Image (cartoon, rainbow, N blue to C red; front, side):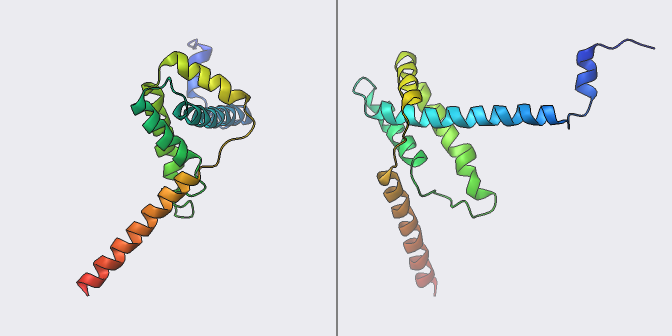
Length: 147
């Protein structure tokens, strides 16, 4: 009988046990918590005079969308509804973090970690509502033109 290392056996064994599931869930919770903290840190960065103007513009846009009570793609639409929460917001946060100097971002993260309330972006909600109204108006105009 050949001796196999414990690590190689672990890789071959099915990972359907409860411990592994709890580990994955704890990683997802930590990721979501960090995402919320970073979104708040971007909101803080958008209001800080030390941040370059282009980073402020992107930070303000990403934070406004992240804290908007209205989604660009409503969550009730199967699969697509959650893509903005799973792809667009994290990608926007990752891009914006690269634009902000590291020492400032560390300061904003620390400030965001101690804040208890997150802002609600009425500007983000208004922008998304205007996008929906424009899309509906274009669809009606296009249908009326083709009729």
